[in-house]
Image 1: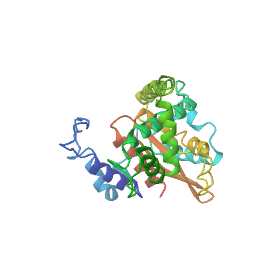
Image 2 (image 1 turned 120 degrees about the horizontal axis):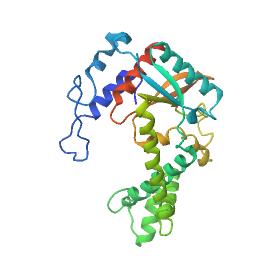
Image 3 (image 1 turned 90 degrees about the vertical axis):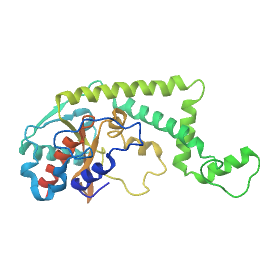
Image 4 (image 1 turned 135 degrees about the vertical axis):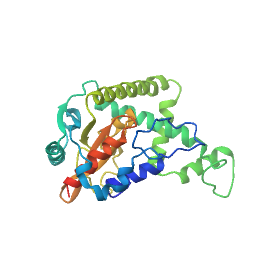
Length: 278
């Protein structure tokens, strides 16, 4: 999204602006130091103010052990090194347990929901109203199949097929509705953890990036790479990924998670860590 935290904050400031034509946007009361948009004006002067005014003193950071267990040693070491830097700067860091959060069910639930929504939302791309037109029409089934076959890549087609299956008669209640219930429990678990901590910190991915094309023929292993990010997406809480180290020349990501509509706290912590990391 951006090459540094300040630019990320600037982007948030732009995309969070009030839109009179959007009736679905949240109605928020801006904080005392807020700008006309959602974000905060000190980001515009962040390069000049440095980290003295923007600090993490007194900030409570929780590190869920469920997100640390099973990750590669290099990733684990980099994440804890980052926590020690923030701790030395005045934050309090605690290892916590999110016992109600089962990462195995979170991953499965996310992909059931995501693929079901992909199937539903992409149904309109039939070449008649939206999507690719091949220039010649035959009977509906042939035309529809050709357009969908040529217009979508392999991963998109895989998600449509799996999502259609999860939404089909006899499986809708067994898969999709249960996945929605799991999402509700995961959301409550994050909200409970964030009542006691200002932000949560965890690895973005459980291992260092694999080579380009290395796992393209194994979709399941690709989906498993998302084990630390999909619970956050299910909960709908804001998060930010920032580099916290390197392994064999490849960056390791630190994921900072905060309360709903409290992106400011995440950005503050990320900015301070960016300064500390040089």
